[in-house]
Image (tube, rainbow, N blue to C red; front, side, top):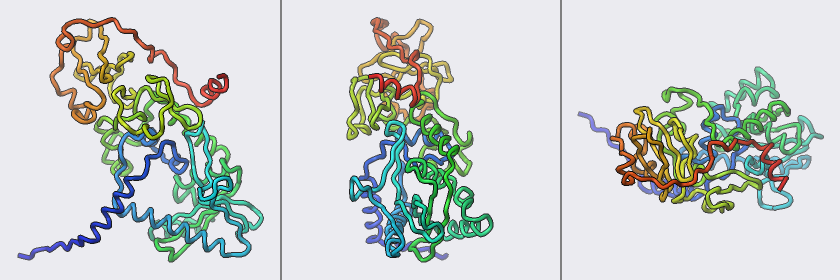
Length: 393
C-alpha cells in the first residue's frame, strides 16, 4: 500500500501566517469604495458597506494583492522614466497620499493610481491611470478581446467591476479618458487599453451607491436564491444571505446608526456622532438594523425590534436593558440581545426550532408603559433630501 507523505514547510508556513496576521491589522473600510460599485449583486454591497461579516483573506489572494501593488509601483516608475510622460500618483495637497475623491456626503470614496498625460496614443489628453496585475488566463482573455473588438470596448467586455471603477473615477476627476495598464504576475508581460467616459453609466452608478448607503431599511435582492451558484459560493456573506446567520454586532449593523455629512455616522441612541475608532466595536445599546434580519418585522419600539417567525413565535431583539412592549395577542416571545443572537443562536432558524418563552413568565406578567419611538413612521431619505436637511441647519 502506497503512503502519500505530505511535505510541510514550517518556516514558510510561519511567513504565511505573519502575512495574514498583518492583513487583519488593517482598519476596516468605513465607506463604500468606488472600486466596488461595479459589483452586480447589490445585496453583497449592502452587506459589505455595513461590514456584516469579516472577509477572511486566504494567503494566495493576499499575496496576489501584494504583488499587484508592487507591479503598480513598478509600472509607474517605467512610465515616469519616459521624458514625454507626465504621471502624478500623489495628492498635491497631501503629498504621500493617493489622489482621492468622495461623493454622497463622503460615504462613497475612491483613490486613483494616478493621472497621466503624454501617452503615445493620445499625447495631449489627460487620462485617469490605473494598473492591474492579473493571472495569465485573465491577461490572455483581455488580449483576445482587444484584438477582436478594439481597445475602447475592451474594459467593459473584460471586467465590469473595473469598467465601473474607471467610469466613476473619470466622473469624479472630471476627465473623459481612462488609461489602464495590465501586467502578468511579476510584470513579465503587459498590455494597455483606453476607455471613454460614459455619463449615463456614471449617474447610474451614483444612484446605485446612494441606494446602498442611505436606504438603510431596504435589503436589495441578491444574485440568486440558490447558494450553489458560482457567484454566491465564495461570497463572504453567503451564511448571512442564504442561511440567515446574524451579522456582526457593531455600529454599522445597528438600527440607531445613520450616515451623515463628512463621511460621519450619527447614533440616534446617544444623539452624537460616532468616533470612527468605535464604529466596529460592540455596544450594549445595539439593536440590529431590521433589514439585516430575514423575518417579518411587526413593530419597532424604543428599546427593541419585534419580529414574527415562521412558526408564529415572536422574536424581540432588545438592547441589554430593554424589554418589549407586547400586545395580548403576542403570546410567545423570545427575547435576545444582538450579542446573544450572534454568539449563541447564530442562525435565525435555530430560534424557530426553540420552545417559545411566555412573555408573562419573562417579566412576571407585567409591563410598564414605556414610550414608543415611531421608528416605523420615520421615512427613509436618500442623499438629496439628506443634503437639503443638512444645509438647512
